[in-house]
Every structure is written in structure tokens, then in C-alpha cells.
Length: 223
Image (cartoon, rainbow, N blue to C red; front, side, top):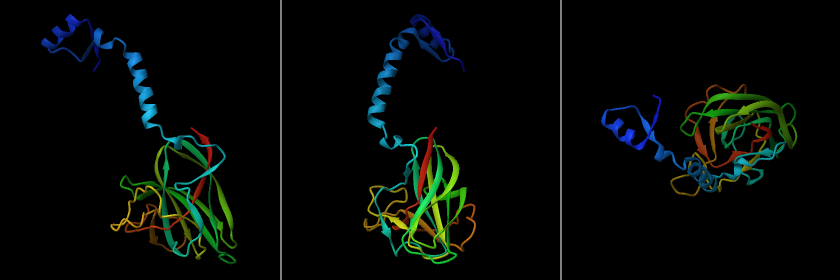
């Protein structure tokens, strides 16, 4: 419904007669300045430093990572870890680092799931394909994937226990929450799954875990 602009006298009369939604001229006085002030206050109090991202660099949810962890899910476990995107962007690489050689002919598969709206991976967004994990090394896959701001889940599954670099459980926040003992911050959903193409959607019934493969993505552009 269109809004009518009235003088103050017309404003009062219109209310009495049941007129359309309206604004008085007096109520509009100083609006641009007021809005600008309010916007500046919002910038100061709601600014997210994670919006500043250098194009061409790799990023992941938690910066605190370490070498391989024998507690990370082994072969034939599908793992999904949160990736919070705070501004629209495009990524052109997805990768991981393995710290235990898998041996000849071994592989891991990487991808991204959308969030289901309840802090759990849902629809498959990207099955990026495979990297070999025959030797200890950083491996990546070339992609071209737009990510509007929101919560996503990077995933990892291998056909061998290759002990990927992992994320510390002692991070400050995770959408999965923490254990009832307050000791373990959950960073990962894991589910037994035969190695192969990523399932769509993510299987139900996964377990929350405090050990997560450190899957990283590279920023192509800020959109």
C-alpha cells in the first residue's frame, strides 16, 4: 500500500477518517541525517572483522590447527565441519593437508554441504572430487563456487586413515555446541559411510565430535 505524505493537520484528519498509511512532513524532518547516524552506529557496533578477507588466500573456520590427529575419523567416515561465510564471495580451491601417508592408490574426497537450518549439513552443494593421499602433503582441487553469506559445511571422506591436519576442539564457538561436561567443543559431524561419491543429502544420525579435519578454501573474489 502506498504511503501518503500529509501536513500535520491533514495527518490528524486522515487518522480520524481511516486513511491510508501515512507520514507527516514533520516526522520526515532530519531523516537522512538520522539514518546516516544510525548506520554509523550499526557499523561501529555490528562490524564483523571476518568480512575483511584477502583475495587469493586460504581460509577456514578455525585458525588453530595442528598436525595429524589419530582421533580424527579414519577410513570410511564422512566428516562435516562448519564454514561460516559472512559476506558473498567466490572460492576457487578447496584443500587439506595429510600428515600420514595413505600409500599407493589411496584417496580422499572433498566437498561442501549447505546447512539444513538447524546446525546440521543438509543438501549437497559441491562434490569437488578427489585428492590422492599417497604421501604427506598439502593437496587442493580447483573449483569455481559462489558462496552467498551463510553457514556451510566442508566435508572430507577417505578410503584410508591418513590423519589429516585437524582443528583444535578448544575454539571459542561452534554452531554444534559443546558437551554437557563443558569440556569438549564439538567441531564436526561424523558418520560411517562407504567411500565414494558424496551422498545427497548428508546422512542423518551423525555424531558430534571434537576432532575435525582442517578443510580450507581459497578466496577467488569478494562479490
